[in-house]
Image (cartoon, rainbow, N blue to C red):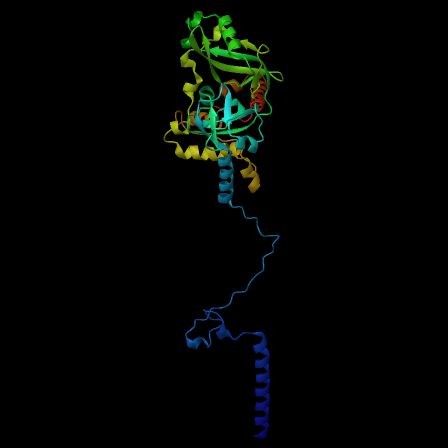
Length: 373
């Protein structure tokens, strides 16, 4: 009928208008195909329909900071390599001196005669006076006296690190212990003779630190001394060492404390390479203790506090004490051992006082490792 035809035409016109309006807003579904919108044709033309995922904009404030640990570690390694020097020879400098190139002296802002701390193997360090040498092949080469090289546990070809030691004061008293096997008359050698030889040995200002070894000619015999302690003008047992001034520094040699070679502390030095079967434990301890000591900036970069203590557990003989000693040797930290029986006391408050004294002593020799066994 005419009415039905008119109604159908109205419905068709509405449908066409609605389709035209939607086509301006909504993309035809067959355009969302793998391969991009440039594909002409509906899904029947061979394309596979992939529904478009809605995109959600991220709030830049809530976006977490990205920390690239590998890149940061590489940057620190590059910095350390730039500061490392290679010892090429032991001739050409006097006792207690380190020879540097003019470029390296200028880079480190050092002047002729400045005192520097030289750190070698296992964190061992000694004090030297910086002098300029013009015959070095590279600006990263240096020359050290054989005695100074031994004091920082280095060898020719090893890398050492140097930095200015601005806190070194003049020494007032130096406690020196001779080794008996090097004395011309053994224990019968008088302390006065040794003191006179030491005074004759230091005729100019030279730096010295506790733990150093020096050799002095005494009655045609080369006597080896261990520097046990250095008292500076500011404090007793100065951990920074001191400068020896001729005729103004007192040498102390006590015959009761002549050293046997078996008492040589260097014979007891151990490192990571001396321990076996505890590789995993060493790696964990190095990460928790050595990293905060050597690179404290790592923890600051990620915004966390470094660990302050580590608990080593295991049966007797499993290597707990050896790991702690090797850690102290490798890092060069002051190693303070406390036995459990030394802490306990029947008097109330005495145990706490003993612990406070131990931590005060460790703070004076920072960086330090306190090992409670």
